[in-house]
Image 1: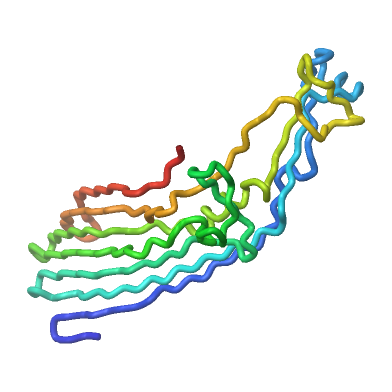
Image 2: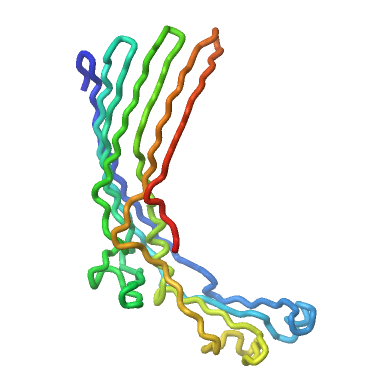
Amino acid sequence: MVTRSHLFTMGADLRFTRQDAFRDVQSRGFLNFTGMLTGNPLSDLLLGLPTVSGGATLDNPQQLRARSHNFFIQDSIQIKPNVTLSAGLRYELNLPPFDANDKASVYDPLTGQLVAVGANGVPRGGYNTDKNNLAPRLGLTWSLTPDTVVRGGYGIFYDQSALSPGEGLYFNPPLFNFGMAFQYPGLPPLTLTDPFPASFPIPTAPTATTFQQDLQTAYLQQWHTSIQHQLGRGQVVEIAYVGSRGHNLLRGS
């Protein structure tokens, strides 16, 4: 919409993302011959004595879904013939990605147990939706002379992690299990007749990926100012300062 000194725009950005994948992470198992027993990897292979064996089981396929609903309004104001101010606001609602069949689990630190998503108060995506993502934008253009222009701006930009969090929750027990066995003194020997023993005498603590229930969407503050001057035909010199600062960035612990 255009008036005498205003250019008003508005719009929406709706995204529906899906990913159907068959995960294959060592599902056929592996054998590693290093020569630890004979001093030669080939000799270990011919004798059927692997150094390490392992494999994984997965609940395939993984069917991830994600939705985001983003809306914006902006007004460009011609304050003076040589000064233009742009102001806008964007609202982003990025729903946590989830598996269509709820093939995901999270770790509950209160009980020390893995809990399936979609039940017991656990959202399908593993964490709650962040609903207060407002992103203002502000820009200014000032023509000092016909050859010199000053520009400045500020904005907040939210991260759209798409399907990545959902992929991490899929690789949690009991949907994903990974085990290894080693050729080690005092342990039952590994051989090709039994390279993947059902039980392993060295206990290992399970690992799991989980997210804070009230996870806040990561965002970036960006600002810049610049001055540009035209020296002559086809020649321009510009000096600019650009700054940014991240907030609520994902980090492991």
